[in-house]
Image 1 (cartoon, rainbow over the protein chains, first blue to last red):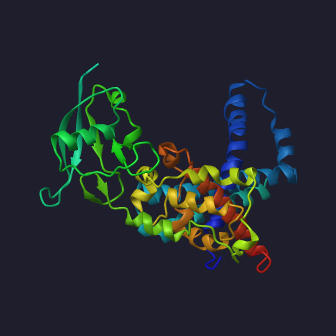
Image 2: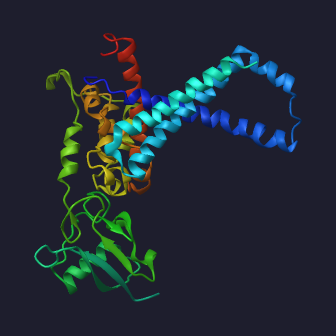
Length: 117
Length: 248
């Protein structure tokens, strides 16, 4: 490619985020948002969840579940602002806010997961 | 069944109207008549000055695309009886400048179409004496769907991204680029990638999908564009990871 645009990278993060969200979010929301609070399924105790989350693989999975959907949001929101509000002339500001927000969320998720337990 | 139906036809005659305006025509509503038949009836029997494009009357030429009740349609394949009791509003295709009445200015599309090089590109053309470029039915199948495009521009009229940003290459041109990229006889993919991987190429598409909904030939331009995005991403990562070897 003559001009190395960053667009393919952003789209691949967006795409990965879509896949990750579709696979993980519904079941996580169902378990932790509906089934456990309503007592449909017996909630695991604090101890077992705490043990589970301390495992490096769990943290890695949670990182993936946090990061990619954040970039999915950033990309989607960027284009929503472009086309919905028709403020494409603010391209640079919007891109910084959206992807910057996702980056901030990534750092925050990393910090929290690293310091858990 | 009603014997007549009213057509609200958009008129724009630059020497008469400053702005496009609607004119109502009452036409016979025959069960075998499509909107194009009604327009031809108006031109023949009521007002000979009505201007519109048409040619084949059988969904092949792609000339008679218009907005029918706000939806992009081939008027040769849109039956009057589906719109009873009427009225039916006929307008020129959205997102294009209007030349006159129902005729749009399509040179933007023609420029873009040419820009994606929709023809077979060979690094080296073989002499005729060496025979034809052969292709198996399986190889044909990979691009056949995208080759069905008749350039009717319904997809451009349906595309909100093109409506907002005329720099966007747009559905039909991208689908046709993909049609040649997937052709086993073609070697021009790298040339097309340069044009298509720009922001206004494939990346402008936000996968609204309306282009594929309105396509009368089931080309699925939205699908072609998504396929192409994946291809461009692969090439991008290759060019990062293998700065030299990634390009063939």
